Length: 136
Image 1 (cartoon, rainbow, N blue to C red):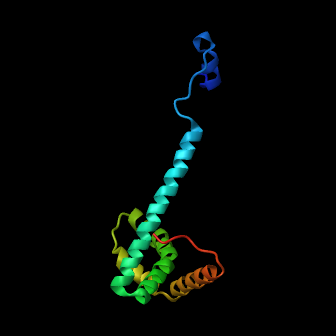
Image 2: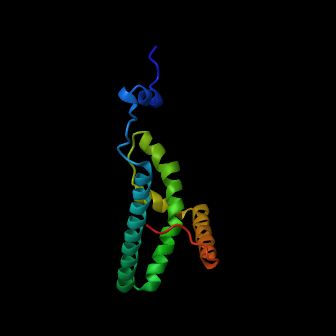
């Protein structure tokens, strides 16, 4: 049976007692990752705000706010629709009209109540200074 590789053994077995050098410093990789995420999130937020400003100019702020509320409420409903309705049908090898099915799914009273509950929760959280996840 082959013995598992142990990095400490490899370091000890190197000629002349030299230690293996790391090619990349893990701290530097983590620092780069954090910096990349901060910059990309900032760019994403700026793009989101620009898109919202344009949409507000094109359709008006009231229509934009209404649309954003619908998107926020529909997110959890779509997750449920996808996992409970679409995936089993796709796994069975069938295709289905996803958009029409979601429209029918959200027409059910229980789903509409759940969606309005999401809006109430998020609006109360926003009033209390707690913001939910960003759109997009």
